[in-house]
Image (cartoon, rainbow, N blue to C red; front, side, top):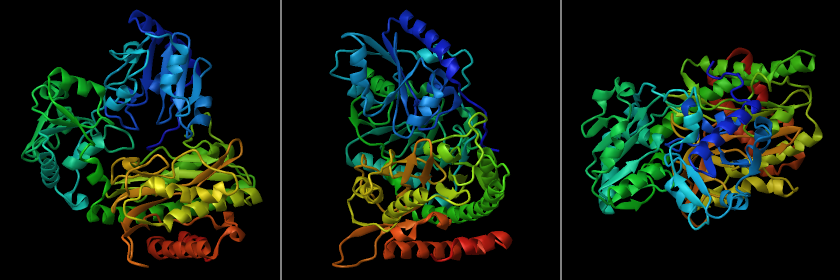
Length: 597
């Protein structure tokens, strides 16, 4: 099993750890210290060594931060984690709703003017630190105090690195380096510092094993305007491919990174949204001219090549067949539950991973599988463990959000199913979520619009009856890279124009605390839209995910004729694509599950 179910943090450990950290703060003359979830590469998922927030507070979500003062310790989380954080942190910590509660306002409320707040400059971006300017507080870069008091902190990750096949990438690393170098020359920049692991992997066609669920290589790089790249990564993990990096790629130990920065001739491009403050300070100390601009890899990485899209389609069909095998198994498991047998959330997770493993091509799961039964489904990023494991109950809903990492693609899919006969209210809520998902699937929009312009389409059916959900409608997805990839999103906060080749999730939801959670998710890719009307330049989505939606949860009386036609058409496409990949009882189940409404 890739997924485990042990309890990784406990609220009761926080009191002693917090006291130890406060003693270290006092010894350093600090009135506060910031503990982010992030590592030096600003990844959403971190290695065990960098799980400082979880070690200190017990909160294991993938986003958040803690501000520790002498008499307060606030844990800031967004809408995805507000139920989870209350269950995971002890009384010594105060959960705070972010971004409604702003860090600076909270600090100024609890600290006097001139108070010194420490932070690790490797764990906060240039933009973050710039945002702290203009306050009466003194923010002080310092050594990481959590590292100083964490007695058994794990070692840094050192997973083996492999080359990603050019046939799947669609472009050679040399071509990518040459294109980006040309872009640097065009704007008069001599070099660019790259700190994001997935950017590094995309640029050099590499994949690694430094972070569970994300096949990335942790390291830093400098791209020069002539296409040369200095790569700073542990030589041990690079041994398998050190001679295959190609002419113009120089491998060096991580300890040489700062030394090399000091030798650069500017202007040097640096992404203030992702680069550690420590990098900017090193360049400033060496009097190297810095020009702030977006990581040049981010946009071309987001706009997938035709080879990547073709490979991703194959991965989704394989994963769809595995999901259908699982949903057939789940139908039988739910029948046993109605008859009085016990089936737990852990049983569900194990079964699903087993079907993916049976493809013989699964390299990892793309994130910890979410299998929330009944009220656990209302915890948006719920992770089942041995303590929270819950048996499925008749009449409940089960939310299963999962994905696989295959060499040819990364998948992410959510299905909500009824355990037995669903209630009228559950069916109405499910149908409104489905209407939002259909609206995004059918969307057409003028080139230049962003995810912000589409987000309301998914929410309107819920808004119409006074409901909503506290997360974005969609995130970007990589190709055998991170399951959460920027810059593209379907969100009220996104201003990045959607472009052809971008892969996103389409996942509206609805959550009722203490009762149930509903989410339906397909992945989609942005494509050129067929010309209609007066021939305006428009884009649209192509659906990549082909897995049946639970028809028992659909209240057809709420659907428009167009929505009903979309569901029947989608299920027809699922049957056409997946039927050749399954057989026997699964094929029979698929025929029933995709029957017209």
